[in-house]
Image 1 (spheres, helix red, strand yellow):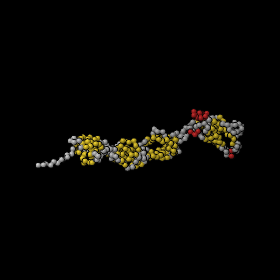
Image 2 (cartoon, rainbow, N blue to C red):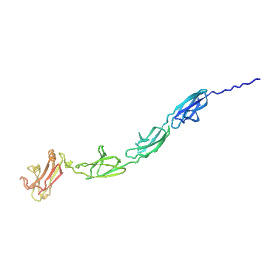
Image 3 (cartoon, rainbow, N blue to C red):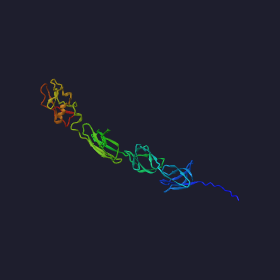
Length: 359
């Protein structure tokens, strides 16, 4: 009897044990040259075994949310379990920030990124993050900090943040008014604000100590300090103290005006101004007197005296006395009658005008 024999071809098979760090990655594979196909299983601790694989070289891809895809190859041999160990690297994303106004510091998860708006912050790990924008003179926004999510390989656009302005103001006046207002944070050089008292200086940062100084010629500067709370307008009023020697009359070349008012009478008379008892040269024939032709002309005699360095030195340690003497005739010595006041000029008051009424 003849028996027919049938040849049966049995495929050679092997297996793959695939593991990943972290586990839970989806397994995709295909025998080369095919493209990997999802196997419907994920890696587990100790490795996922995929059996009955035809021998040959396989393309493998592992995917896990928040991580970059892992790709590699492995060769399956007959009756052999081939081990594949993959280490997955976290994928990163980015977040785009903007603000009104721009220039705000971008803080993520409580740390300053070093970037300012508008900016797209790169290399952020997948998951939930907190953020806050900070800008001098404005409230930190949002408050409390906001949240955003990062998906690997994507850019999250955070809605534009509108910064709320923190403002305060100084309402300042002086007696007399017209003083320059100088202002700066305490410890910094004072800066002239371009205005004089009374005025309101706005856009000041609450919580910052400020120093101000009022400056007016012929008066001592007056300074003060203040610290504003949110939205406060603080009021300051200062009385300026007159300098003992006004600035405008403290230097050589500045002038003092000497004035003498005529007495009653019809005949010409003469007035002589003296400084510390010494006649000041004038316009009479002797070079020492001032002539008022007639009292009926109601002429006020005026003489401008120019201060010298010697006067300044004298006034700094003593006094300068200006006097007015009169006489009805010339060239007889003037006197003994004097005006009813002696105008004393010293460091305490370099008076710009000395007035005399001749008696």
